[in-house]
Length: 88
View 1 (cartoon, helix red, strand yellow):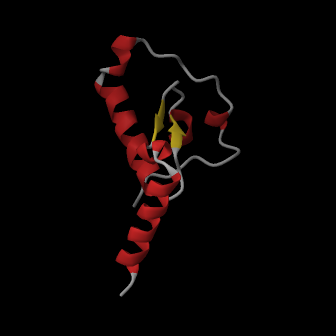
View 2 (cartoon, helix red, strand yellow):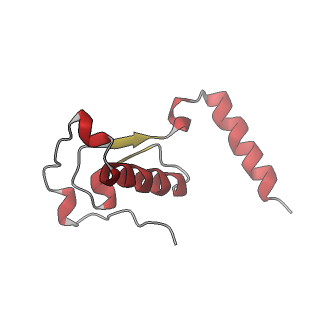
């Protein structure tokens, strides 16, 4: 089961997210949050970014998928490849 994305109406989406220091980023807790964010983002076919509050963590962190930096041609080629792989 994939980690759920927090939906509209959840109070964490209205909270002021907490800032992090550079030292916080290396902590186990923050690294677990980042891993959870990457997993949730990877599960979303059209998602290009996610913020920590979207997985229920009121922290000022966001993750951007590598596909956000691809050219239109690369994106089209990727979509065609996936389409071919899904065909029997």
